[in-house]
Length: 364
Length: 90
Image (cartoon, rainbow over all chains, first blue to last red; front, side, top):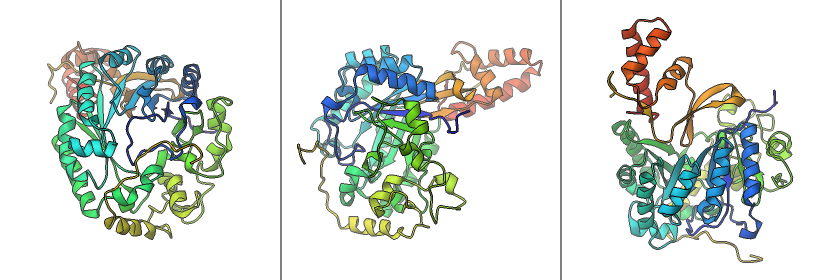
């Protein structure tokens, strides 16, 4: 028996290339160049290792995963490894032929993002003219290809008021599931926090909308709701606990306990080019550093919720306090909890302008 | 609502598969999974998009030598609940 629980899911970030420029992108602010990406054969090995380790599901993500020319081969390799394959896509590079190839390769599910329900606003947020209309066409193609569809809507101050329209859109497009995900503020989103943080009133209206829709649409549409930390009293169990359920592999092959973990200083993340996934999961210092509860200090240490929320999010703790081992300030027991209210206040006076996601210039 | 005549099937994107690492069966779903208990697993293994709910209950009643009406009511309630979660369609 291994001393660690086996991971359930692998997030495969196949590339950081993406035609969209969403200002809340979950990729690190320092993006990997195409030349550094893992090749097809290495991904195939990673999938086999993930399945052997106990993973049941792989999220094929990015960046935009379909920006890779070998996306169908990659999907086939994941499917042949026995993983449930979920494509997380912005959709704008897909067409009928590519979707057909993906379905034939064994793709199990498509998660398509939309940036808003209103086309003009959606195209502005995504930084891609005509993107929304293309997404709607692609959603219909996904449905026609017989693939199950989840619509993913990242929500924030500039689109949250159209949540009812987003729910209606999910129904209209034949999605079986809608993910309403409040922006999580690291990386790009942290840079854009003042333009994105919703007001308390917006949040309460959104939560009520979701609750009512869940009741009314039971059996027709499943709605997953990721709540925002900045109005919370208790932190989320980020990743279900560090190194406990989940691992990510970055485009250049870094094995990570969370896709944002590269933002943390002082880590040497194992690379799948040199290390097996099992060694990374079980033996690496990076995966063991925040595993369990032994690393915690007060107020987490000894807290009855320590094994429920696992101290919250390490990336958020670092981003807001400068200490990745601190209690996530989303917890009301954190001495730094006041930072969140200050951020909400600051954002209330913030403008609408974004810093769009883009690759850094050389040396930048 | 399902009835005895309904023909249940796994909804789009649902896959019943063995999880060998953990010694159990799971229904894989988009970004989630369901872990059926022993009874639910017996039912799910008979859900094939061809058999009616009544036919499934008939098989189970024979297999477990249990009253047919009781098994039908239990099967109906269980599949109805799974339908509410989007696992089962008909």
